[in-house]
Amino acid sequence: MKKIKYALIGCGRIAPNHIIAACKNGLEIMGVCDIIRSRADDILKHIPNDYRKRVKVYTDYKTMLKECKPALVAIATESGNHYEIGMACIEAESHLIIEKPIALNLEHADNLIRKAREKNVRLCACHQNRFNKSIQKAHEALENGMFGKLFYGTAHVRWNRNQDYYDQAKWRGTWAQDGGALMNQCIHNIDLLRWMMGDEVTEVFAYTDNLNHDYIEAEDLGLAVVKFSNGAYGVIEGTTNIYPSNLEETLYIFGSSGTIKIGGKSVNKIDEWKFDSCKEEPEVIKAKYIEEPPNVYGFGHNPLYEDVISSIMTGKEPYVNGIAGRNALELVLAIYKSAKTGQKVSLPMRDGSTLAFSK
Image 1 (cartoon, rainbow, N blue to C red):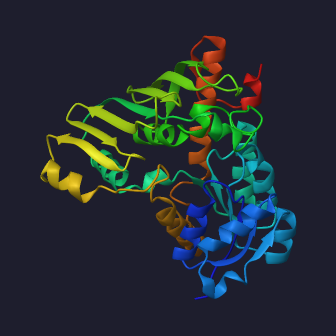
Image 2 (cartoon, rainbow, N blue to C red):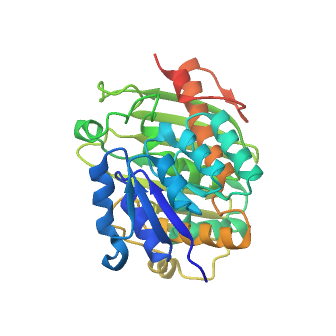
């Protein structure tokens, strides 16, 4: 079988996870691109020696698209550039993996989804934690009705980001290119909460604040209550203020006949597993579905790439498609809007952008 031609745009903090997943899944890496040439050069060390020299390095993604003609592109640039680059890739008829968030503007997210459909291009939002063994097991329990009536779920991201982190990349924490703790650090868990609780949100009320990072524009704390169309509720807590380092990322789901808590560095460890109808011993499940990643990015990129390749080959939608990416974006923007107005926000939202929250 002919290898799928692949290219990576953006060679920063998360890029090694993408290039390693591309290698593991047998993609033909044609080019890597970053406006800072040294970062693009540096990412090559993650590519096996036998064909590293054949990979071209670019600082202009448009030139790379024209010369390499990749069938699949991963976009891992600053968030504010996802839309423009994504549209260019779709126009070039390249399938896409876009790092979170899919965009910073709901209209832009809708345009990406629409254009991908027009061009028959697969569009995947990189919410890789959906592929965690613990998350897959929990979602299986949901699909099997093991929770009974869903009461509520909670998503907690209690992390630390200091000034050095923001100084490394000036776009971080800005409304034009990023957003705050909820959009950057917490959106993966927000995606999981929404997905697990049935996806359909009707109402949000929230507070956000900047308590400890006066050198960024956006929030370092977000607190929200979410109402779902199935009658269940959600609670979101996200912050980068935890002293002195990352504490936890957890997801709880509570139902009439089931309770789970998933924790660990990136929600990859089942801490509580209690069901009326479960035939397996909880301790056996906890041992079977645990992963120990070296960092908060987890191991999800590899199975996500595997799924996208399958999607390209079969024509089916990716497991985490563009609509999933839009849903996560919409919920964060709804939280921002509620915090700014002091009012409940109804969903679905037709429009919204991080730029609306700049002072």
